[in-house]
Image (cartoon, rainbow, N blue to C red; front, side):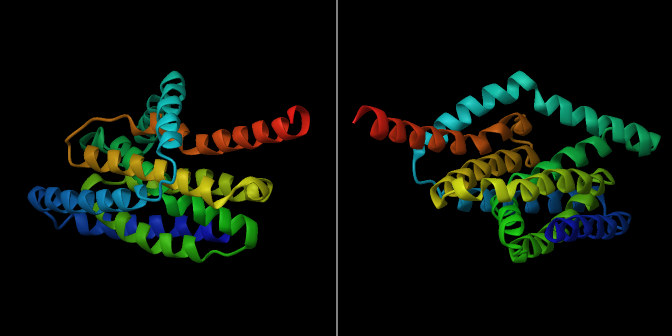
Length: 238
C-alpha cells in the first residue's frame, strides 16, 4: 500500500498548492489552464488507447460495461457522494464547485492505465515505481485542477485510497490470471474513458464517465471465459 499512500499524499499536496495559487488567478486564466490540462488528459487517453490488441473485446466491454454502469447509475452515486462532501465543507459561495471538482479529479486519478498496472505491481511484487511516477503526475494535475475547480479536488484523495488500495490488496489473488493481453485491453478501455473525461473538461460533451467504469474490468471476464471454454472443449469434448 506504500505506493497508494504516496499517491494520496501527492494529490493532497498538489491540491493545497493549487488552492493557494487559485487566489491570485483570474477566471480567464483559470479557464485557459483548465483547457490546457484537458488537452494533456486527452493526449494521455489517446496514447493509451493504442494498447488495444482485440477491438472486439474493447467494443463488447464498453457496451456491456456501460449497461452495468447505467443500471447501477454509478455516476449519480459518485455525484451524491460529492454533494454530501460539499454540504459538509463548502461555503455558500462555492456551491457546486466541491462536488464537480471531486468527481472530475476522482475519475482522472483512477481510470488510467497507470492506476491499474501500478496497483497490480505494488500488490504483487512490492514494486511501487509506477505508482511513484503516477504520484508525481497526479500532484501537478491536482495543482492545476484545484486552482480551477477548488477544494473538491483534494477530497478525491480518499477515492484514490479506496480504489487503488482495493486493486492493490486484491492483486495477489489476480496475479495468476492476469496476462499481458488482459492488462492491455483494460488499459485501452480505461484510456477511452480518459478521452471522454477530457471532452467533458473541454465542455464539448456531458458524458457520465463513471457509468463506463465497469467496462475496465470486463476484459478479464471475456478472456477467462475463453480460457474456460477452451479447457472444457479440450478435456470433455475432444
